[in-house]
Image 1 (cartoon, rainbow over the protein chains, first blue to last red):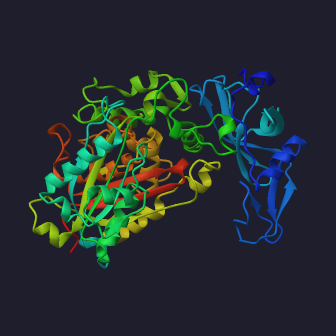
Image 2: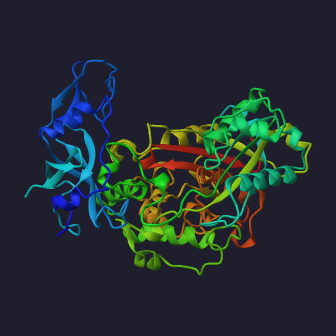
Image 3: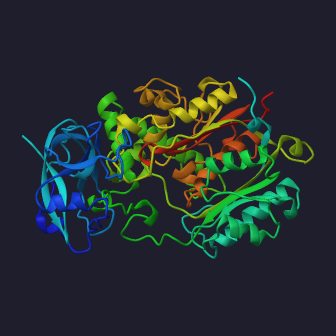
Length: 142
Length: 387
């Protein structure tokens, strides 16, 4: 099993934390409240991520932050042995998650066996503190 | 296919400095000046003949406008910072519309990466939805490879075959970072340490220092000079957003570059079968497989078998990355993108070591970018001007 999932390792001093922008603030606020948020266009109903000022499907300005199910599947992954910087305890698993609403995000997979990962496996969001912020990460559902 | 004004443009001189992980005693200004003097001498022109400039050095901070001042040639035209195929297209467009006649394009980098515990600074995205998860360029490109292996059963051995082929080319180029290295096999690639699965160390490009430049002018002007002009036959770009800010989803970005290749083929009146040399962008081994599929050399999902079937060696039907590319020639700053064009030009003009010559090469394809970078540009070059 990967050690990546131990809260202490995930919140080690020196690990990078997100710097919210005016546009992304609602996303990171949601994480602090245990809610995975995504923008949805009220005109075409399309989901938009990463955050934008207008709908990337129809250019409407009627974007609204909505709550995602936080459920999805493992779209792709990589087991990282050469860390981005030394504070990351390798190996760790970086992933692309396809959320049930059809949008995608980058994240990490918690507490998994890096040698036995299957694309398409169901996952569920979990919120992990990082400095002043809280990061959405994912855990495999059995 | 009708001719267009790009078909009257030729690249008449190229110069690479030596490339190495560290070039002791050099900085990016000494390197760019070597490259500039090199192309001027090769073309047999005077510095004052240059009337268009797109030159930059990222560490020292030379901008194209400042470069025009440094050269003292009072250029009429100055290009944008963006280097590589896009810069050559931009310069060619400026010449085609009469903004300039003799354009210098070049860049160099030295002194930025100090090595140590972290990956190179320019491979570490600072974006809020990327950085915190420990991602960097190799990991982002790994997503594409992993997804392709899942969908099509592409084997790790196919990736390794690409990496070994490219690296063995670089080992034979005297200016390459990896010049003189012993030949390696796919097994050596598979035995190298894992970086970000499925990429082993030798599946990944290197980091290095170096510089390069080229000169572009009209076919008419080229005829008056003692040069071996190489002509632009077609080119295209495919841009789908900012690199390394969002998930590189295979279904969305996996075929990036296809629109660029279609436009380039269309302008050249050619298809994949007409290409003699493939100077494809090689940040990671899998991207070569992806490009063969995306550009129509083989069907989607068959790129792994394609590279295993003897196509990609110097004696194959579609030799790849004949100078050693980003994996073993050089990967300095953004000049490495321009060096793809230079590799194609030098192969067609015969300005390569005998050991790396592709006999009878008439047409070459150069590319920049890749799946996780969310852009991919394509240029087709030829020994003969399109009539």
